[in-house]
Image (cartoon, rainbow, N blue to C red; front, side, top):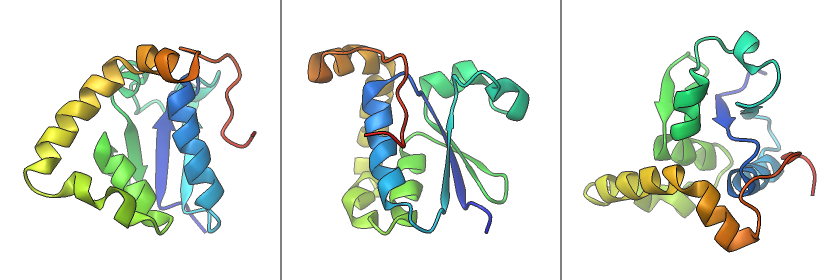
Amino acid sequence: MANELTIFYDGGCPLCVAEMRHLHERNGQNKIAFEDIYAADFEERFPHINQQKADSILHGQRADGQIILGLDVTYQAWTLVGKRHWVAVLRWPIIKNVADAVYLLFARYRNTISKLLTGKSRCEACAIDKH
């Protein structure tokens, strides 16, 4: 079965990896594939994904090839694992615009936010399938 969504995430960001772990644990039907944008062979395997842009905003690719960004990726991912209700409010009209702006701020300062929340701004060997 082909994945319905591929998420391109920052594997060195403790907060990003924490969310990917939560998704991975709920991904029993393997609807989502997870790809670290800083993997050694990333650019070879995904030449159509600009690593620098993917570092500034979460990228996802649907099975039909469509690229989605930011909270649209988050919404799609949590929907695929049956937890749409956790993030549905983020896509409601009016709230969507505010949530997207806040997400972009979070994405820009995620290493600082991570340092404040976890004590680590980056991790060397974060992995979504390890606890």
